[in-house]
Image (tube, rainbow, N blue to C red; front, side, top):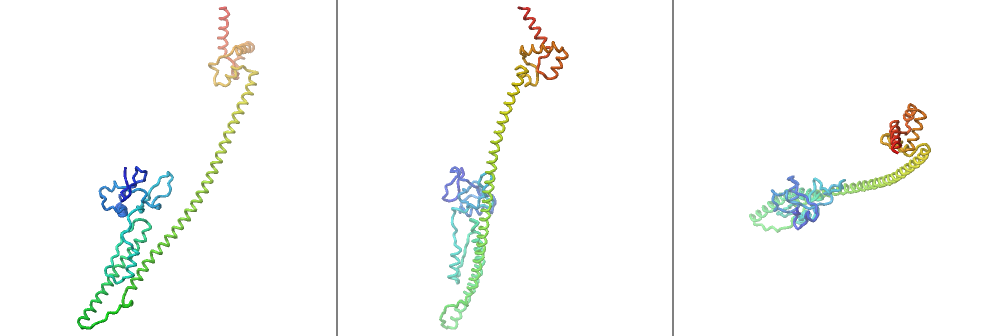
Amino acid sequence: MPSCCVLKCSNSSKKKYSMHCIPTDVKRRNIWVNNIGRSDLDPSKFSKYYVCGVHFAPEMWERQRVDGKKKLKSCAIPTIGLREKSTNIAHEILLMKRDPLSLNIDVKTEPAYKSDHDFLDNVLARDIEKIDSKTVNIAESFTELTRNIHNEEKENSVLIVSTPVSQEAIPVPLNMVDVKKVVEKPDGKIQKAMLEAKQAKLEAKEAKLKLQQASKIIDKLNKSNIRLMKRVKQLMYEKTKLIKEMCLKHSQNFEKILNDDQIKTLCRPSVRGDRWSNDTIQKALKLRSSCGSSGYKEILNQGIPLPSERTLRRRIKLNTNEEEKR
């Protein structure tokens, strides 16, 4: 059973957590490993390391699928419950404002790939790195200037009372203005992102309303379909009932003219194999004797259920044999 490779996380697929393998793409894999904070992972066994679904933010998942499965986006990265950043950019900017002449300016920023919300921190870190080189050059030039002043004091043996340097002589305000501009850029991007988020929420609400309306229409259609099915069943029952009643009426009318075996023969496609009753045989003999052979054949051709001449001859022969035996 695969388990989560994040520190202090004991989730596994045995506990019914969704496990996700570290991606094979080099860039995404480096981002995952950096966010997880595990430098001891074996690069040759990355396919055996997994991260559970608890460490992924809601925006890292795809929208609700038709099959009901939850699936990560192709650009998803773990961001929840991981190690915190080692540096705080805002704290470094505050220190630079308080001590702009410091020579040991070292603003270190880790690549902030922990989530989509850290994109603005990346932009700010890159801009501060650009400012870093400018401030170091300014500080070095100021240091050389002060060193030259001290050398001149030693050579001329003149005691110079040190006075605080005016703010105009220090080119720090230019640097501070640049920092403010750099800070203002992410603010504009944050506002733009907030507007996009509000617009996305409005679109989601509209989609939800449309979905509710569609579900109501579907419910109405299902109810009407159920009512129609019930109506069809009722009509089918009434139809079968009417057919049975009509059959009973016709059978009663047929019984006045035909015998039971003749009525059964009418319901069959062929006359072969039918057993004729004595009453039907007697009726057929009377018709044959009165109409003759040709007249009787014409009656059979008209579709009237009567035994054939061969059946009549066989029945007459049987009757004569029985009488002789007696």
